[in-house]
Image (cartoon, rainbow, N blue to C red; front, top):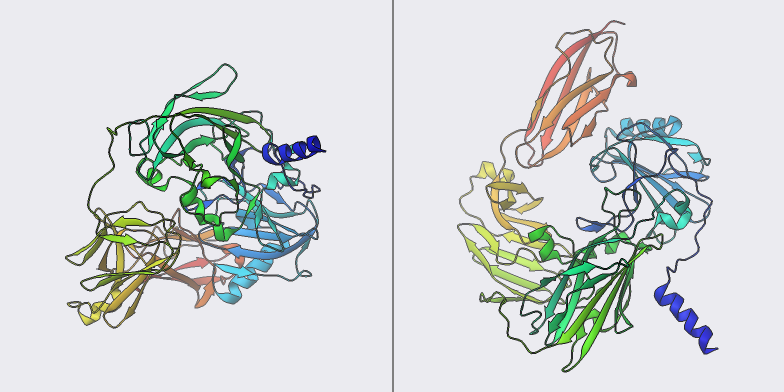
Amino acid sequence: MRFIIFLLLSATLFGQTKTNYPNQFISPLDIPIDLSGSFGELRSNHFHSGLDIKTNKKEGLPVYAVADGYVSRIKISTYGYGKAIYVTHPNGYVSVYGHLREANGPIEDYIKKKQYAQKSFEVEMFPSASELPVKQKDIIAFSGNSGGSGGPHLHFEFRDSRTEKVVNPLHFGFTKYVSDKRNPFLQGIVAYPIDTAVVNKSQKPIAISFNKQADGTYLASKVTTNGKIGFGINAYDYCTNPYNKNGLYKVNAYLNGVLYYQYDFESFSFDESRYINNLIDYERYKEMNQRVQRLFHITSYPLSVIKSTKNNGIINTQVNTNYTYKIEIFDYHGNMTTIIIPIEYENQKATILKDTDEKTYTMRSKVENNFTKENVSVYVPENAFYDDFKFNFEVKDGILSFSEKNIPIQKNITVTFSDVEGIPAHLLDKTFIASVEGYKLYYNKTYRKGTTFSTRVRDLDTFKLAQDTIAPRIYNVNFVEGKDLKNQKTLSVSIADNLSGIDTYNAYLNGEWILMEYDYKTKKLIHTLSDNKYVKGKNDFKVVVTDNMQNSATFESHFFMNN
């Protein structure tokens, strides 16, 4: 009996345990699956929630419904997933298809009808089960590059209908489409002295050298310390090709054979995705652009991908004791790379010292905080930060700055400039709180009450009040005024704003609103003439663009259609 229990425990601790998921789904594309992004991959402020499937650097590939169901949600956005379709399946899961160029057939007709009814390119719809049913292998859309996409590809994901959690698509039988025979790759190891500890004569985090052994195992050089220590790794998986650095599926860390830290990317909720900034060494990422995954944490936090910890992953070394720290990194297909780190207790004097700048203020992470200097205040809700820290902040010549800029923030904090003097009345509505980076200013949505301005942010930037009085630009019109456009397929203009950014854009033909799709990457507004909103003969064309401070620009012209 004890042997059976041991086997069960071993399967839990060491195996690639996965919940049973339905596997009747087909691939959303009819080309070989080559991934540029994996589930759980480390991205800016979030974990990647699906698979990014390459589309051979082209747009317009047919996108298929992976199983029977119905279109339950459609979201058309300038950013994020761009044009996205959600299909609910009777087995309790939703498949999601993002960055589309356009939908197909009745789905595209449904979208256009709603856009014209709402007079908006950006729309969100929730069709009923009877409105847009689909069968497996139906072409529901065509692949594209819309929204926050860096190149043509299909973003594909699964969600649990009941919990709205995203689930790794490889669970659903997709390993038959995705081939991976490469072991994960280790790029770096970092050791972290905790509290008053010294590691390899350093009070600061320090990189650890390592070598790859003949059996593929990585052996690190010996680590010496006189107290508490934690580790982090910079590692990735090549998955379907040797060019894209994809994310890991699972990490196990053991101290002398005892499981000390474990996380895997089976599923997570969107609400917890920003906790990526506490899983990684955020300061190192901001300073060196390295996403080191920490195998410990100082303060517990609710990230569900972390499945097991002992002492929060922190190793408390003792006098006259040696340790072996082993890390196993897995991809979804079970390919594994092992890292061995020998640790030895040693009394030592630090030659690399912590920064000793005096800090006046203390941020308490578990309670509300209010800080005020001159007429500037900062309100911090409870649990906005992960750990307590010391800092300074300064207000000089109307500019708010913080001494600590590389501290991750989980919740919005509020920055307020109160009872501001010296702003002319006609500029109050054009004033906002800007983030300052060098000579550049960046817009933050700002709320004004009289001469008091406030904004909610998630970075410890430098802030100041700024004004935007300049209207957006409308340029690069793709036709000559008065021209007959009988052989032309689109109307397009480029739009841009110098500071606060584009807020609204509307276009009209002969006084009637027309749909123009906005692609912020190319700065283009595009109207498809096949919408048949023009009349025979002369057509008056008008575009009105407004920025976030309500400065407005108008372009007017005309063309002829004589076909």
